[in-house]
Image (tube, rainbow over the protein chains, first blue to last red):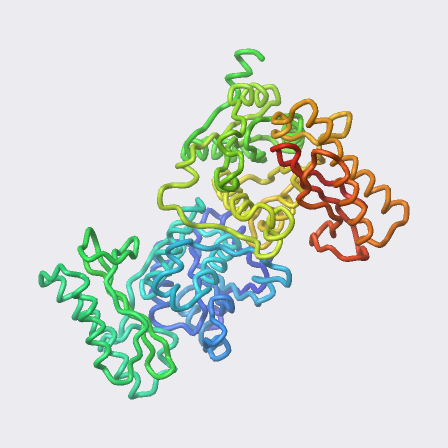
Length: 288
Length: 288
C-alpha cells in the first residue's frame, strides 16, 4: 500500500462530508455502489467490494457496528473493530470512500423512526433474535438514503437479511438495485464470518458440522427426496448428534418466501443457526 | 377551464408512467414539488397546491385514499372520492401531474414493509386511532420515494401528522424539504376538512365549539395563565358542557415534542379531537 493509494481513499465521518464527496462523483457521471459493512473485514466482504469495483465506477464502503441489530445479551461490545486493517483492506481493494459514522449520526438522541417487515422479519432469525431485523432494515434504509447509491451489495451468507432488504426496497420503491454475492467459504467448507474469530481450534472443527449438514441436505434433495418434513427431521437429527453444537433451527424453506411447506414448489434454501460454545453461527445453501 | 388547460395536466396511474414524466421535468432542470392528498379537495388542499406552484417549477399532486390509515370501524368506504371535480380543481390550480395509483400499486399482494415512530405515533391521535400513523408514515414514505420531490407540502390542520412526517424524514435522512401550510378556516372559524361534508346543519354549528375552545385556550395562555394542567381542565370542561360533542382529547402540548408538561418551555400547540354525531373532527392552534 503506497502513500498514493492512501490518498485515493477518502474517509467521511459526517453526512454532509459524505454527501459532498458523492455529489462530486455523481456530477462526474459515475455509477455509485454501496457496500454496507460492520467492519472486521474478511474475504467475504472483499468479494462484495470486488463485485462493486467491477460493476460500478465509485465504490463506497460503510463501516458501522449497528447497536440496534444486537440483542441485549449479544456481542455488541465484544464485536471486533479493527479499523486500521479494515482501511488497509479497503485501500488495497480500490474503495473510493469509506463512510464511518458514529452512533449519534445514525441515531440522534430523539431518533424514533423504525422500519419493519411484518412477516419476513419475524420468522427464523427474527424469531430467535427479536428486534434484530428491525435494527437491520432501519440502519440499511438510513444508509441507502444517505449514500443514495445506484446499487448496493450484500452477502448470501446472511440469506434472510438480503431477502428482507430486497423486499424492503421493493415495498418502499427505493430506486436502488440490490446485488447478492455468494457466500465465501474456507477450503474445508466453513462459511466466513467476522464471528469465526471467537472460535477456539476445537470449536472451529465442531462448526464444520453446519456446512456438512447443508451439503448433506442438498444431496438428499438432489437425490430425489421430496418429503421436506422428513428432510428437516434428518437435518435436526444430524446436528443434534454432534457434541458441542446447540441448535437454534435447521430447516429447508422456499428460497423466496421462506415458508416451510412439505413439498417444494420452486427453489429451496437450507438454513441453519446454531451455537458452538458461546458463538452463534448461521449458514445456508441454495438448492435449485 | 379550456381544452388547452386540460392538455397541460397529465395523469399517471402507474409508477413507471409517473417516473418517466418526472424524469423529463428533472432533465429540464425543474424543481419538483409533491402535494400528497386523499382527494376530496377543498380550499385547504388548494392552499398547499398554490404554495407549491409559487415555490417550485413542477407540481405533482397525488390522490390516494390510503386504506391502511383507516381503522376497521372508520370511514374508508364512505370517504368522498369526487375524482372529476378534483381533476378540475387541479387543472385550475396549475398542477402539472396527478398521480392516482390504485391500491395494488401501493400495496402489492405480498407487501409487508411498515414504518413507525416509536413515541410520536403512539400519543394523542395515535392513542385514539391505533395503526393510523403507521399507515400514514408508510404511504408517505412510499410516495416520497416514488416521486422523489425536492419539497413536499402538508397542512397544519393535521398537526401531529406533519410533525411525524418531518421527524421520519429527518430520522431516515430523506433528501426532501417538508413545508407545512397554515390551516384554512371558514369565516366562522371551522377548520376545513373533507369530513365536514358528513355534518348536518345542526352538527356544523356544534362543530364550531372546537375552534372556539382553541381560541379560548390561546387567549387564556396569552393572557398570562401558565398552569397548563389548569388550562387543560378548562378546555375539557368547556367542550364537555357543549351538547352533542364527544371528546377524545383536548390538551396543550409542546409544539415540537407533543409532551404535556405543566409549565411551558417553548412554543405550544392546543389540540382537540372530538366526535360530532358520527363524524370525528380534529383541530389545533399554535400558541407562540
